[in-house]
Each structure stands twice: as C-alpha cells, then as structure tokens.
Image (cartoon, rainbow, N blue to C red; front, side, top):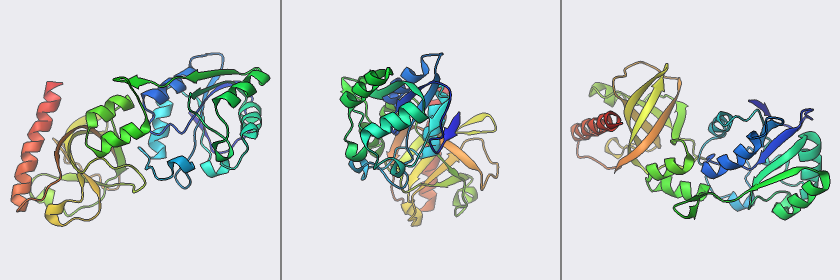
Length: 301
C-alpha cells in the first residue's frame, strides 16, 4: 500500500473512503469495502494522523490502536493508496475547499465513500448533504454507508473502547472483526518470571492508546511464523510494587531472548482482574493455573 503524508496530485482515478477509522471495526470496513469494490478505480483511503491533534469532539478520547496498526488493518482490506496527513493540516480548511481542491483535484476521486454521520471541514461544518451536492455537481459517485448494527446497536469506536476498558474482550474482538492486539518493543523486566521458570515478554503501553481492563488475558504471540499460546497480564504488577502499565506475557513453549524486538501480542479472553498476592510464590502458582487455562483454550479450538 502506498502511503502519502501530503496531497501530491495523483493521475489515476480513485475511489476514496473517508474517515479516521479508529479501530477499523466492522462498520469502518464496509465503508472501505465500498472503495475497493470497483476494479476500474484505484482503491484509496483518506484518514488522519491524530497523534498530536484530534477533532474537537474526539479530543478526550484515547485511540483504540496506534496509527501503524490502523494502517496495517486498512492495507489488509485491499487498499492501494492511503493518504495520512496530520489532522492539523486540514482542520482549518473550509469544507468546500477540502472537497474540491483535495478530494476532486489532487486525489482524483471519482467515487467517494463515507459513513452517514461523516463531518469535514473547519469546525466540522460539512456534512453528507453538502458532500452529496458537491459530488453531484462534479459528476462524482457518492456512496453513503449506513451504520452497521450488532445486536440491534450501531457498532462504534466508543462502544469498542467501553468493551476494552471493562474486559469484554470477546465483544471487542467481534466488533473489530479481528482480535485486538498490542504491538511493542520487548523490554527488560525484573526477571522474576525467569527465576520462577515463567519467563515473560514485557511491553510498555503507549499512554495515548486506550488500555484494556487491568488483569489477565488468554493471548497468543507470533514469532518467526509460529503461533504460541500465552497468558498476558496488563497492569502495574501490584504484588511486586510495579508502577508503569505493562503488558507482560508468559508464552508457552517459548524461551528465545528477543529483547529489543517488536512483537505483537493478540488478546482473546479476559480471565481475571489484576490482584495483589501475599507472596511471589502465590503469584506464580496462580500464573501456572492461568497458563493451563490458556493451553485448554487453544486445545478446544
């Protein structure tokens, strides 16, 4: 997938899906699929880097995933070109300028795809009605995708954040359409797990990303093409007086030294909340029980 951080003109006619697409959930995927469905057009997505500046109505919301993971999921849907400017680069642009000068002129959009509540332009002044009028004027096809329902309720990034923050991992994964994962560098810990024959992979959490409920999850780690079952603790490790939120994963049947490597840990099911144990021995006895539950989980699959 070609990634453009600016709006250098493109010559090929494009179908462009519009949105931040935080989570790239099942609803987002239908908008993107509307842009990938015409083989005569180059499939594109216009999304935004909101790391430093977010739309005002989303300013207090943490992202479901970092930008790199969002782009990985977008690429898997068959998108050929993705525009990823910083949100601040377009936030003050008038709505009609955004459509005529960026979408139609520089991005060569011949089809535009969006959700029914899509807003654009300075102070979110543009809506689907304005976009439809501008597309009709320019002879551009507009596809407005209705909200996608799950159990009669619209799928939204807010709903997924709530599921993650409350440990409803199976619900979050269902709405995402792909299991939630944590990607990060493996860092050194206290090596208590190694001493107790339960070595772990430790990863720091990006503070700008929505953190799942503190506790223990059944997980998996892929390394060198092989999938390993695991058990992941997310939190601050109160038994050993931890303070920094980490994802700490014991990987079954894995003892490679991979400090400094970037690893993706996928979470499947919440097992129990984070708790303080009276001793390290008691903690690792519980980890042994959690590990057996993870092994059974993957054996049942």
